[in-house]
Length: 123
Image (cartoon, rainbow, N blue to C red; front, side):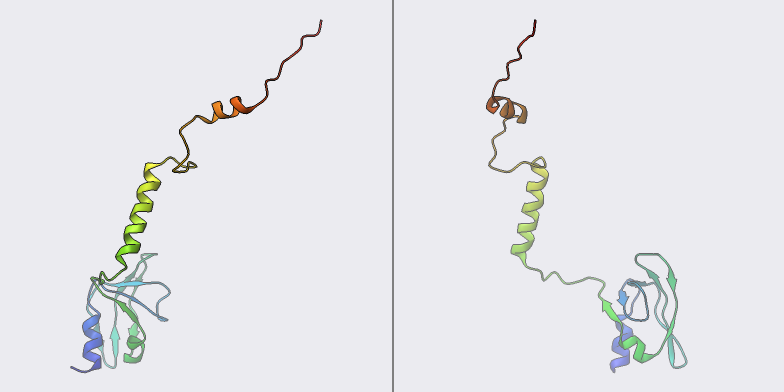
């Protein structure tokens, strides 16, 4: 297999491509069709849903960045666990409260520490 066959093998339906030819990431909807020296690539924009079907040369196809159908799971497991724990704590605790803060209602805190104001009646 040469480079052209390898490149065309990557461009299967469902893969997402990006490049200077497209203004947005595009999901390929059908196999590329050869039209002389060019290849017709049909795809749908990921953000706008717009349909694209340009005729691209081999040089233009080589400039595309291809995202595989099933991306590898080679991320950092420790960072993933840290993110999941942060999301869990964010859902478990009400907003604007810290973990170590006691559960005293804010009204009672304010009234206990404020000086008592005595109103004098005139008359």
